[in-house]
Amino acid sequence: MIRIEALRKVYRVGEEEIHALRGVDLQVGTNEMVAVMGASGSGKSTLMNIIGCLDRPTAGSYSLDGQPVAKMTSNELALVRNEKIGFVFQSFELLARQTALENVELPLIYSRDRNMNAQERRRRALEALDRVRLSDRVTHRPNQLSGGQRQRVAIARAILNRPSILMADEPTGNLDSTTSHEIMEIFKKLHADGQTVLIVTHENDIAAYCQRVVRLKDGRVLSDLPTAQDIAGRGAA
Image 1 (tube, helix red, strand yellow):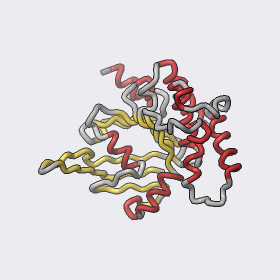
Image 2: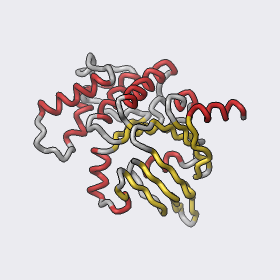
Image 3: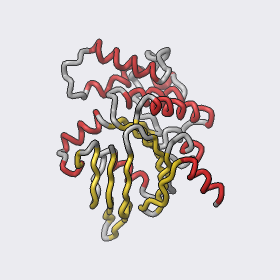
Image 4: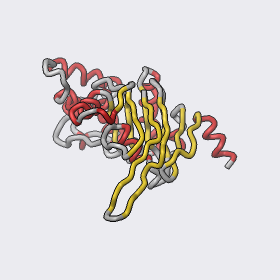
């Protein structure tokens, strides 16, 4: 599904060059659940932005579902972001004046399927909210929801278009430990149902929910191990 080879990203700040990625190779198959970890400045956010088609690399190649991303137009990239990739953010990114149901419906408003009526949008949104166990809060606005419930709304919105990849950037960063594990159980269930999941996190206990842990350092892949081996390696270190 995701194939990255010799990926490089250089930012220019004045006369200075910042090498965010220095030749990253990575493959993620269908229905994998992968954690991406690294300290601040390791390149993990840059890598995820490129995978999410929010940024372009300076060099190297990235193919998504067999299609070279570099050859896509701006409109094609926008469609990929809307239909193939679901995003979940640390800060939820919900519209304060909209209900949970209205927040979840938003991606369908920008979908290519202009013939989808309001009834079908509502049905799809209710189905997504039910999958994250929030069907009893559909009329609540964000300020009427707990942090965990807001993140469930964000997850429901992200899976609404049945994306190929669900990408979560520090999805538990604003939550307490108990709620964090409840959210990770939802990701785990989505993965069990066939969803490919990529999670950026700095917490080892969150990464432990995934099948693989990719660790970055100074713009390079430091390790790419099955979770059990990663945990064993940390224990021996």
